[in-house]
Length: 262
Image 1 (tube, rainbow, N blue to C red):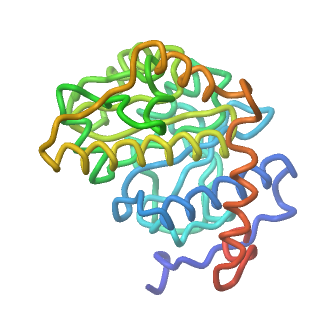
Image 2: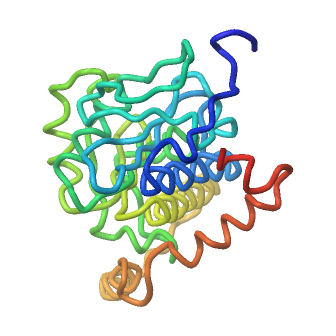
């Protein structure tokens, strides 16, 4: 597409701080990985990352596919959604991005990255009154470690922010009922790893329930033990080991590392 809706953007490497550039590259990689694992919804949804040493966030342009996002195409905004730096393009940002994400970043300084999705399995489980069942090893990590937020319509009302923060609480994962999924983390790798696990848990639940047979759930004691073992830093840094493998996966794509780190 030509003109101001082009997907070619001025490179920002060397024009922003090293800390901001590193955050941009990690976030662009995360967008690409979400696309690779089938967790996208056309041009919709958002992933935000806090720029280290600031209160500002990075978010996607509203109109780009996740697989088109690069480090230089990301928009720098305040937590209130005011644009600080944006590429020269007619693409803007989606208000839902800072309505949902901004309040979480503000309320939880420990959170550096927030991911929100509308996947088929995520929407299906979000519409089930039972919510996410701890029926698999993957899902067990969310036992008593996930929040639920009732649907209030498309997230464009700033008044919803208080409820979003309250319902997430101290958790890093939340199911937005009749809507989709949300994860967060102390880093981009942590948030991505948690979303991958939540998505896989939802897919397994939908598949198992579709079989129409009686489900088997682990005991309360086993679930508590399992959930504890999966929390960040209990056994190892959460998501970091996987992240390096994921970057190698992206590097093997046509164009390799420069494909998103540009």
